[in-house]
Length: 280
Image 1 (cartoon, rainbow, N blue to C red):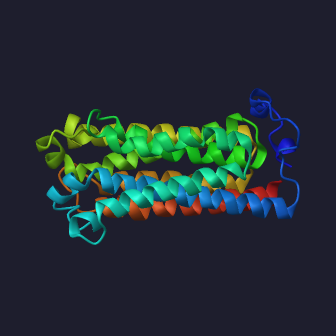
Image 2 (image 1 turned 180 degrees about the horizontal axis):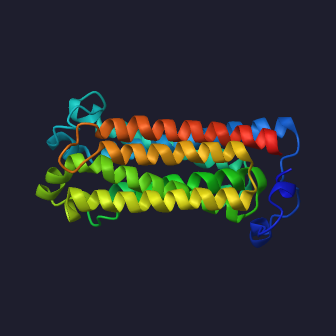
């Protein structure tokens, strides 16, 4: 049980909201599969809402940017109205799914949506938009833990820090492609603010923080050797993407952004899951 696995440092948020009538730890296979199904619905609908809203809100800039002019709204494949309706439907499904998980997740669902939808506005007023994107994705470990256990714990906080620094770092790398466009259209980003070379240094620092957080999570969680093998792969992919992207050579940005980070996430997750089965 997770109560035995992470028995220290917990603060029962259910006590705070006055919902203490039942045991929030999942203890049987049926409940585990139900939770997994609902969490997957939340993941898909939140991501879909965020992406659709971003496309809706940025349709003007997407049409002007040669890199994004092929997207569905500028190309006329999807109308802005339908993109907005899809966003609303995804939000409704997300909130509905949280209602059937537990009350804490339901209460916090508007907060999660505010962050993931609010990101789309940030490029209009702050170069820290990359951190807001990272924040939105970093809610996943906390949300999943609350969905399964109904309690707060420091371990998912550490994994959320891994995500926010990791995502922010590679989003800066991706934004290198739009430095000139962002600057000429009064849009904000780290590359447009600092230039390509300094932006890459910021990305490197953020990825160092991400690596430190994943090590701290491993220590706190008491994971076994498979976890640490995953950490090596994760760290290796961080190093790799910084080795192939240079301020004066952006040809392999997509390789760094998509391939390296895709491998890092999938392989690390596989090692963590395997470690949980072997160690606990």
